[in-house]
Image 1: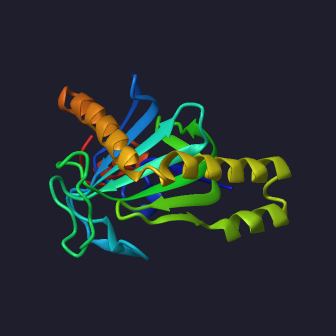
Image 2 (image 1 turned 60 degrees about the vertical axis):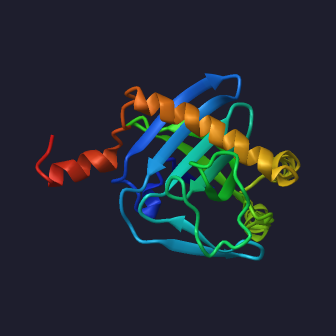
Length: 217
């Protein structure tokens, strides 16, 4: 199993504004992280119903949620505020006109931890669920999960737990995409309000190192 940091440094996102906070509210209890893309090229994936979907690019925002008592990381990849891709011909009306998601990518995880710089990380357990506003619902990377179990990287208990978490995700969100949209938008607003009130950018080690190369402290 691989460890992945929530600032998504392996994607090359380490120089973008990254916020990390715990939220305890009637809507959500758990860890909330937010990445703002201040620049960068547009990258796309393909799905059957939504077609070509944007996942990165200037103006996009990634909202990452780890609800308490779950084994999942929900990443809502949002278009620049108030917009959605013009090629998305079947794109529905969203719960919040400002926050329009391109896709939700849900990682199934073994657990979370914190690195020495305070950045949260999760232990990825291979299996993922992909959902789009247009109705795509797909379990992804089952082959990787099976291979990990066959190789001994996962125990039978871990393997079964990953499958069970995937089923829980499908039951919770797969049949209620509008509800998922509304919930994520509401939690994002909680985070945005905290940021507007002065929530500091999380200064992870990649940013510290980059700032040194720029002659900054």
